[in-house]
Image (cartoon, rainbow, N blue to C red; front, side):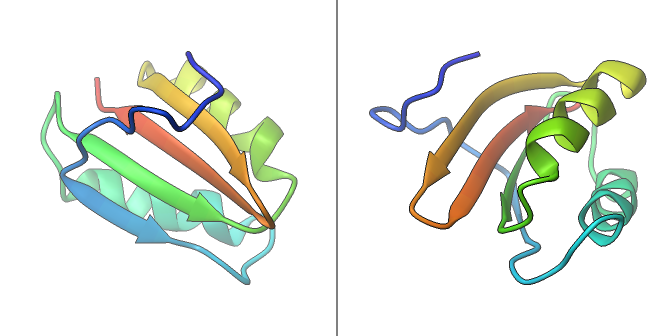
Length: 83
């Protein structure tokens, strides 16, 4: 897992949870991954600092791969490969 944005991974779907707070970003992620296939990559943009804790735990619990996690200005960006 890299912490830079030099080479952003390809993503199949974007989920922008900007302005939402826990637990909404994680709830929306659960809904979004149901519509995706194994191996696809979800890009999540969030503004809630709690996502820095919640997204890695979400991935670990469900077996998804957190490819990249970055902080850009007031946003947090995650790339997740679905299990």
